[in-house]
Length: 146
Image 1: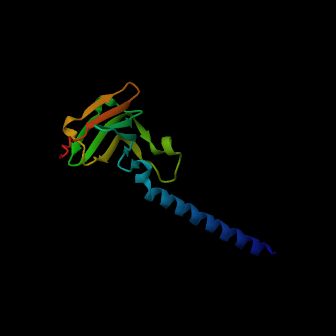
Image 2: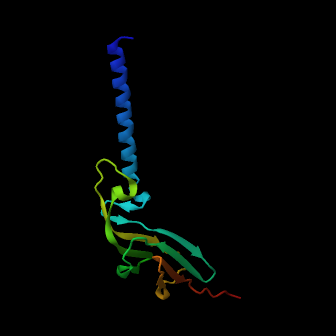
Image 3: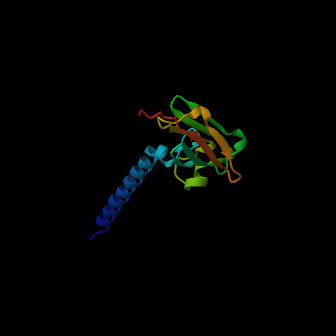
């Protein structure tokens, strides 16, 4: 195989790798909302929803948050949770270095659709010492017909 042929083969392979890297970066950027962050500087906290016969309990992990700024409210049929971070965090601090990413996070924000039988007017919010927030939302009382 001549030097020119080797050079052309190498050039084609490098171009294939470059295209694949671009495709993967595009896929990662396209799915950023599912990864728990937004380019506007908000992180989506980890949470777990538990259902009991008389209530819903939502546990939210706000590691690194300034819980004094915590705001939990109901807007329509959605629970909106926001809290500022105690310090700004860069994208690369969390996800590693990615070309073209200079996103800085300053707050948590999560919008969660409420179950139809939730009664948010009597909601209780408790912040635990480990910055886990416990949100208790009673269920609407259903009167059974006899």
